[in-house]
Image 1 (cartoon, rainbow, N blue to C red):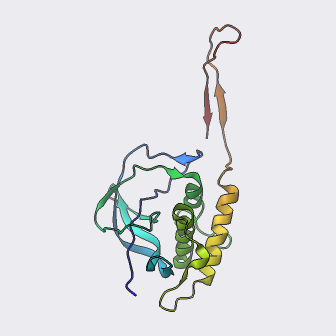
Image 2 (cartoon, one colour):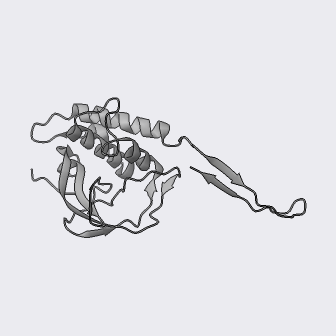
Image 3 (cartoon, helix red, strand yellow):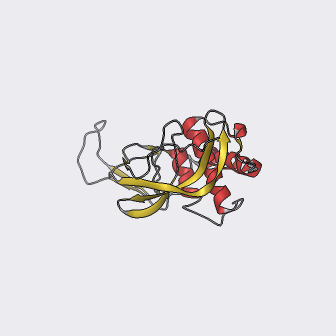
Length: 188
């Protein structure tokens, strides 16, 4: 079976405390090839690469994941970060490979990248992780188990985060009882 390359909307690894990562500043990303991962078989797509992709963002080298398994990928084409990223996806990107490493349960780099990719596809495209099978004799049971653990962690913890600072700033103002008051809140 021919290995298919998949298109993806780029998920930029950013720290955030909000429910969505907003693409406030447009960046240009160019994918140049596959990076860390393994080949797997998806029910509707056949053999695919599951893992990180080599890319540049505004000329700087980086790794990206795929969040759209239904469109073909064009290498060496420019993509813009014009979409918002769901907070659950952002949680995974901020807490797993390649942004972090050396954490509990982590597999080898290639297999962990594949597990993260499957978890992202589960959340972004509805992939049934248990339906993923090996490609070319590559046993993927550990990757599927890991992907399910990553999804469970994200579902449990994506809604919570630690705030180091929480400031309510109420400037000096005069107001009548029952009228609106202007203030700002900063959380970081």
